[in-house]
Length: 255
Image 1 (cartoon, rainbow, N blue to C red):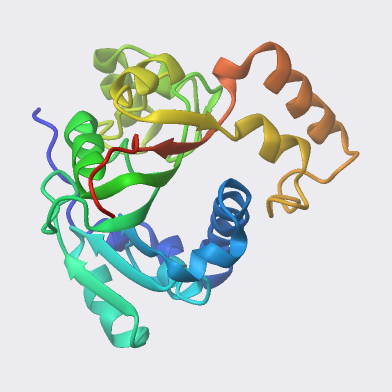
Image 2 (spheres, rainbow, N blue to C red):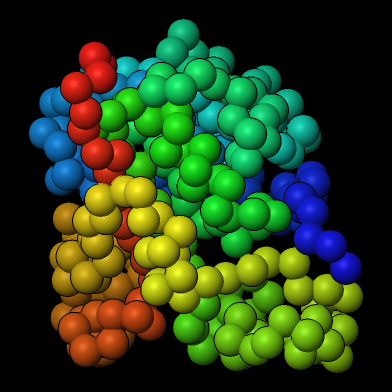
């Protein structure tokens, strides 16, 4: 079976309309971006959210960035976002992440969170992100590591680590579906796909300071889970969830 887009993905995942859950993601995006550049500068930036879905995250980002554009292939989600969130500096477009309908070097920042595994070709998506970013601009990237015991989309142990042929067989046996569409990569593969960027790895920083980066709802400081996560982030970083800043190198091109 050929991998295509998961059209109308929001029909399969009602959680994409859950404001509390979506805002929690945004509450990590903003402090990481603020840590990377001076927080006062966020209000000067035009940010593109690749895979914006219902628009909840973009509505939150609009309170911090100067201009926000959300794109997604999901027509129902885009229709919801346009009807629900109407602000002067907030725009939504139904658009292919592998062929972004924007000119070169046009945005200061990009948000791409939990998207790469859903598109047919992650390499093309990263190339498009690189293309639309201005020199010196950056992308907030969050993604699931292939090396994870519990696959997050279907909550099946070891699913993402299996060879694709076995993963496809695993799905119907467990009643989770007929086909494993998502394609997760290891951190090493993702680094190769992002080789055009300068990568600043925030994964361990976010784990070490959950309050600063808005993840205390998952990692309560001082808890056994938090301590274990910090140990893994130090000795086995290749197993942790990924939060990176991908910066496009600066050139003499006017910004």
